[in-house]
Image (cartoon, one colour):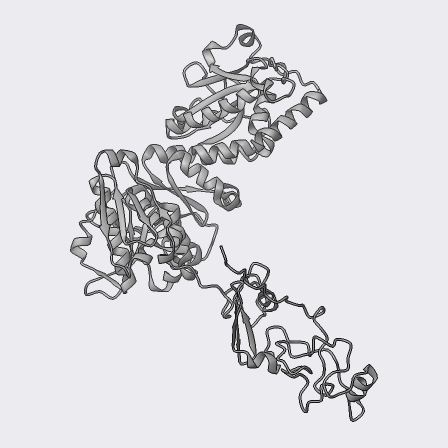
Length: 603
């Protein structure tokens, strides 16, 4: 209760607001510009007289004229202002050089070593003077204290280490806890930060590759593993692989490796190994994250060449990583893994190619299941860019919806999967090329194609279909990304789809109940005068199709429409269902449709 409040720190002045210095000659002292002692005889930490700001101090006289006269040496006027400091340079003033260390009650620590001033306060003025901003982060590449993006100055805060944090990475499912399928493993203290990884990325990678629930608390050496017996064993093996990688080169026995069922071995030539690893391992980490695998370079006993180990509990994930790595290497070094159809591997980047027989290696424990295979799909020149999409989104969408691995090798697409998956992937590729040039009245025939068994159709009025798609199809793209399906719009016609014998839904107007709470007038009842459209949902997985249909039902309910089975549609709709639409120019309805489409896309 009797604590004395600490004194306030002295004010920090900028260059333009600091008191004007008194020249050394005006204070009656010999040599130099500044002095560490003022006219009163006490130490002034700033090296100038704060009591007499108007001039006339020390032994140099009391009037301003006398002080000006004393400032002249050999007819030259001595500047009253302190010399301007160079950015990031040294301060050679004697006042700063005398004081080696000072601390104040506000928590700041200041060092003056050899005339250089360091302030350990985050976001201080000294940070900004050395090329940083208010938050203490450095972005000036030309500053000698940044060396690019990294800060080497003593003003940088101490980086938080693994032992300072308390984050929990990973989660053990309640099902595994109840069933008693949880184990704990203790690792060495010096291996714990390496196993945890940066922001816990290594623990997440081990969990994805093994298929087990792996949990680790930052700052501890205990790892909890939950899951089935095989997945828990694989997770512990992968932790051992990671710790061995930290110690140096990994050497394995080939006989033991050939018995592993979670391993795919790739032969990567030495001169393209850097392409797989990438700068600071970015390419390698990218393959691991996208394919959910663990990649390690391993050498067999009595051999000199390194092999790439692809570890994962899922065979499909290993085949995906293998195909992506081969595609990346082929793009950088043409002809390393492919052969043209003519039998010669030249430098043509648009040629139709197939994989060489020795491009992939299969050991006894890594066998393909029955029906699995590779199949090329040759493309026309200039279509690969369209099928790739922005940042590869279209390629990934087709691959996820068909459950087939697909990668581009020059002018061809190599498909990897079961026969049904490869057939569905080829049909989706053909559909994408057709949708690129189709008109409003043209549609993709789903009656005799292979995709009819993996398709669900939702029929709705034409304005409702456009509002469901959102502006520029954003809502469709969002549903595709979440559900793993392929969606497009077809004209409503029996020549494109068999509605009676295949899964189909219908959207009918349900009233204004769904939009009363939104404080807006109900949308008009589109009775089909403008025609109907079919929203086609394609996916190899029925569960993904149901998830996408549920998302569309939610969007329909916001527009006061409900989804019913196709056979239960009203009688008045059956009579005019396939009639030609009446093309009327209704500006009010068009404006309402655009407004609702924007709101749906935002939601």
